Length: 381
Image (cartoon, rainbow, N blue to C red):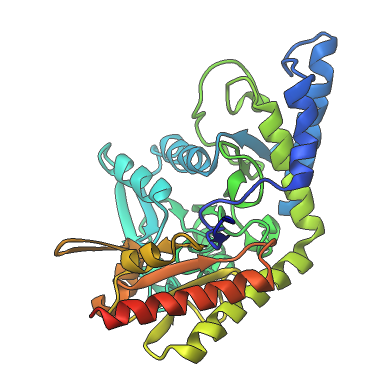
């Protein structure tokens, strides 16, 4: 029995073969501590320096503006909590949105319990933030704005350039969670105008437990991890050399193959949508029709339950649900709730996300299996 077709790349990605090869020496024999001054520390230290350059290149920033972390969650925590603590003498107001990943929403809630005030902006039916609402939310106490680059559930790309301009005019620090966007769409920090940007390695074919944080020169969030002086004194802890090497290589590959990968993901995603749309009437696509990640397809099947669909296709297709149904309780994702998606649609929402290795045959299988499952479930209504 072959493995199910994998269409959940927004959840995590497999390791790229080039990434694995780059990591091997630092798993097999280059075991030295990069902080060591003797011979065994030389190769690991050079590898970290190289990886820092590779990550900086995909963001178009200086290597000194990159610090390595344990993942997107730590990067978000460091950026938001560190900035809030460093600027609390100026104010205590934070602006975010209702559609952020829990690694941002829960951080903001934590700060709320410690005396900070948080405004959570709404989004429209396409999952887009309104910059006018953002402007109205700013107060003299606002010290940081944190808004994701692209939504992990429906793929909508937020107007980061416009938001950064508003933040810049008001002298407010702007952070973006770019876990879903790096490697899929352009992430030039100079064009985006952000002060802080978070990366999660396992979203771009690098190892899990590995991430990075871009900190624009001149920005100084409080230190989040205390200890020795690793990462230029900004993040303590002996470096995860194999993971750092893997993240660096993944960024190099993503930058090199950006156009071909983006086109491949978009082609397979669109083919999946067209195949389902052609054969099934009661479905709707969620998120912005144009300002959307090239690989993400959030689709709702009216009158169905997402977990029942996933149960039917699970042995052949791997995807994610936008709602979980338990007895009489339907737990609809906070993103779909924020978008105002009607419950009969929302509870039947599936997220398919393609990857650079998704094939045409994978899509043909996904269309066939999903349609068969819908027909089977429809007869049981």
